[in-house]
Length: 137
Image 1 (cartoon, rainbow, N blue to C red):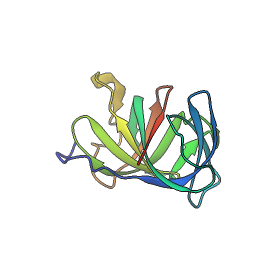
Image 2: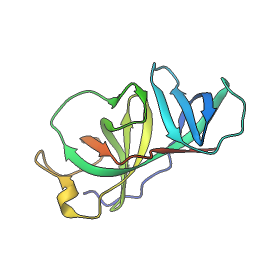
Image 3: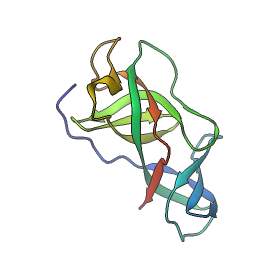
Image 4: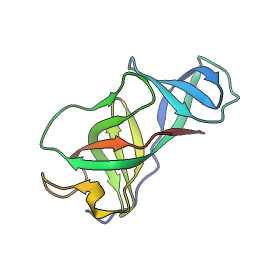
């Protein structure tokens, strides 16, 4: 893995719903409706910035594919995209129109490097632990 410092990168979009400690966040320029754990008391349907954080259950390096988040509506379970920054514990993955700050698994078995090491610009597929969260600016 490239030795760099993970850079704070923010997602832009709108919060369309707040309920029971969750928000529905719609990233700018997408049709995604991400259900994220967050405290939010700001206005609805107005532009906001947030940092999306997730813990990885498993990380795979992949040779090709698109940038996406699954499911399109609901809590993110899988994100795939390009590594925008990385350090030994966190990678920032540009997936589905917004950056995800991913805490890497502690166990070596949680990272599958079949398509080579993780580096800036590398395509990765991340299976997220439940509870992907947003921290609003």
